[in-house]
Image 1 (cartoon, rainbow, N blue to C red):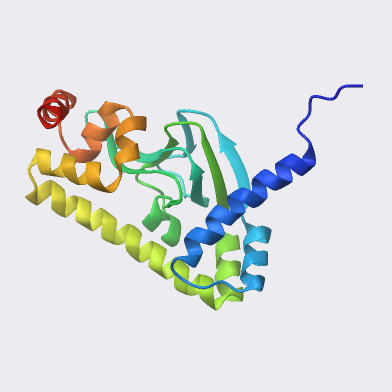
Image 2 (cartoon, rainbow, N blue to C red):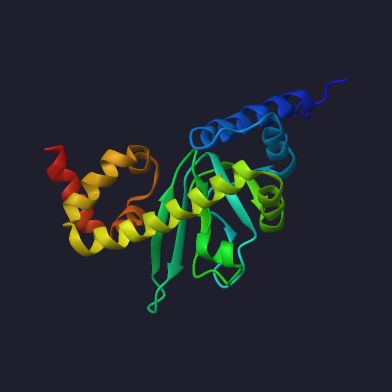
Length: 208
């Protein structure tokens, strides 16, 4: 008898490896106790998503905070002309959500999309509240995550207002080079606030 199902032990090991990524990332900011690690294990769920899947929709209340184990995600919304605008892109070992809407449980102004196939650990809003209640370290950590998310949105707005297109591209190249290799050029252009053809020109100039 040959069974082609994945051995539960393999799934278990995979999950533990992913959980380790999560723990390691959090531990760079706050120290976690054994109890905290157990809580992580209790409240985070593993999900695998396919390429181009929208996992939280615009105009709905965001359900989850995601930790990206692997893959690339973006936030985007439709402008008044029905064009997609990419407002955020992120990659592995980062937390991802439509943050303000998630915290305030308001309808999101943007969609959460997996650009590539993604492996994610997610936690629901009620579970996150429980986790924060049970763990002082998580309370500290979640505040830091939300502050960083709000700060990065402000920095982006600032960059769009003050930096030339080429400088914005170079900054992304320095800070998140893997995004440039794995994310379609039209999303990157939109995120940087430039037309795809201008981005192609900038890329050519930098390579030369």
